[in-house]
Length: 397
Image (cartoon, rainbow, N blue to C red; front, top):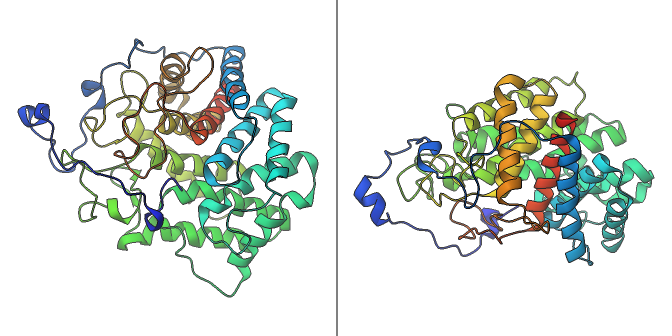
């Protein structure tokens, strides 16, 4: 989930202005300042190149990062959302490289967890469904129905069960965690009712949470949950008086739409609505990219923790690469943005030994798990980077 409001960590928010801001003046309420003017280049890095490296170079970095993670984690871990997001990236790395160790590692993970879901098949909690994405990736290779039995049964209960609620997804992360599985199960069972259910759940998140939904059509960005909806949410204002558009939350949304569009039949009548979001997010990101290629933890306030952050940037890189490859956005306009993001991560966040740094750990907003440092890493951040690198490799070939 990162942190669902129903299971929020005890996070201390900063409701104060630093001395520098007091001297310089706070941001106007809701204003979006120009990040490039406010954010210096990341430590030890100049302005990244606006040209993609070769496919071979991208895959070399992908291998470096994934090999480091696997080497440091002989136990593949549990089936919860964070580790499952890593395995979604690991499977993308396998598809990009054909490296048998990556496939074997994923099979070991699936077997260790019995291809089950955290919370069991009765769960409706989106985070618990994340593992289904990697299980389906493995099913595509091994064609073993046991791999997907639990995710299919869980979504069957949501789609055809007696509880017909569509209000399960009240936080934006849920889009990434659960949406792709509904498309997968619809195809697996040849049952369009799963696409109908997906549409109902998605529509609630986008249009109905907090009365108007989590998507802001003016800024073309997503609020994390009802607490952040401008202007009346309990956490809607940054310490500097701006809106709060959490980078990773918007990254989850971008990745969700990219994955769904990559799976959804083009003839589905909901396809245009899903298609609309990647260009909108791309427009929003275009003017907010930092000089070092990253995006700030708060897309609306570059002064709130103004250092580099990898997980949101990696998810944006994945989404931008997908949208460029499939013609959803202009290659001419956005390829330099994508290249700066990818090259910036490689120059600043990828350690010589492959450890991926500057990952904001588990949270729900820009204030979570601060400070973010060169050594801050996490499984889901590595997974996001692997998704991004695998997609970038398709453009760099």
